[in-house]
Image (tube, rainbow, N blue to C red):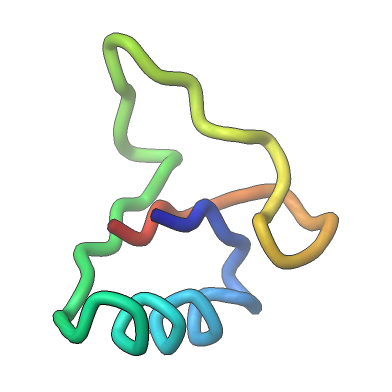
Length: 55
């Protein structure tokens, strides 16, 4: 699972496919709320604000 900004989404997709050998789901963090989990504010690959969850 990766929380990433828009510029880093391609990197997250490639890593996910390499690691799990399956296509991930991409969730827009601005349109989705989670009951028991708060997503990180920063991208997993840089210092930008996280915008997508790749799972």
